[in-house]
Length: 276
Image (cartoon, rainbow, N blue to C red; front, top):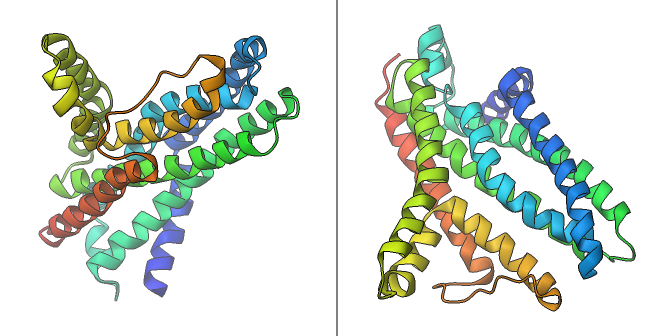
């Protein structure tokens, strides 16, 4: 395990110096603060804590930014080592291939966690101070959002490793990572919306749509967090309503957990075939 921790510490140092990650984390913090400030207006009219309203907006923001930050961290994990000619040196150490991948995963997830805590933390403090006697429930919601955001990021770190182990050039790995982000975060939802519009008899909406919604880890993340927000807004009439999903509550998070395990497993298998 010492080898795993040593690799993790190295990746943390590299990740902190990564300008793309620093820029993405800064954008996450700026947007979070803006959403809290802008969300405090309607929350006053409907007597809801500003932080609760902000969490609804942050959930949507996180679906786009967290996967992108995770892929920017992980797309050159293996392809970059090949490009720089350092993979042979890494594999010459006593660390096995799964230990290398596990160390990188721990390091990248730790960097992502710091970015999430920094981005949401400032927004959480500001949102809590703007509210009046909101109790600890809004803060619990923010902590829940942070934890699930880390889980969502871990999924896409694993997916980034799979992409990185599938090619040998950093540029190709970057293009593949952006393509994965575009398909899973943007085009997938558009395809679901198209299916709802085309299905005139409602069979797609009742039988297929709920399963496809949970199949995508990004959508499962949004459903879980919006379900909590809906329950907090029921008395205000802002709740969008829910129901019809195969599973509810914490069971929704089974999708990102399974995707994380599957992505890391496939990446480990692909890494075995990589030649320096």
